[in-house]
Image 1 (cartoon, rainbow, N blue to C red):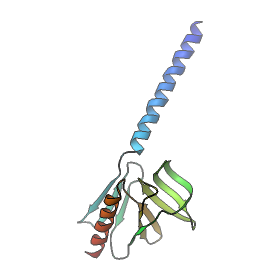
Image 2 (image 1 turned 30 degrees about the vertical axis):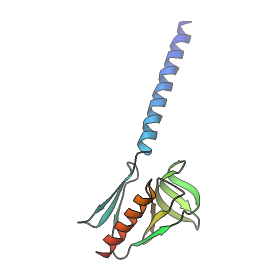
Image 3 (image 1 turned 90 degrees about the vertical axis):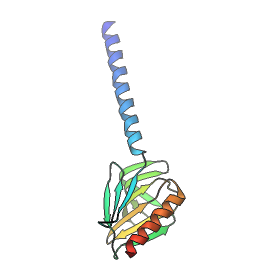
Image 4 (image 1 turned 60 degrees about the vertical axis):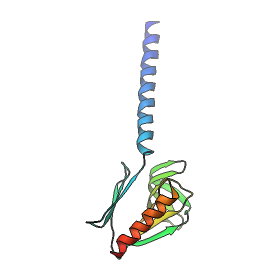
Length: 140
């Protein structure tokens, strides 16, 4: 009888630990990503707490506002409803870094040589503002 109670308590404690750690991971991944344009270094810094990226902004960078592209598969990342973060394979077999807060809204496409980045923010207007800021940096 004592062993049964001890095993039950141990199982319950392990369940709580898993539940709390899972909740912490979920909270970490669903926090808003910071998109910072450093005007002195001309870099876009994407701080998403897991797949941070730094993209140098220069005249070779291609920046577009595009409609969503079909995702074929996930290579390494998070796909939680409309939130996508990490590396995914898109139609056309393009491996790209995605940081999307709203999958169905327009994406900012950034092509740096062979590297593809697709980002957006939760709010459509904020996405458009970021796109405009990136275009202005590209012209400076």
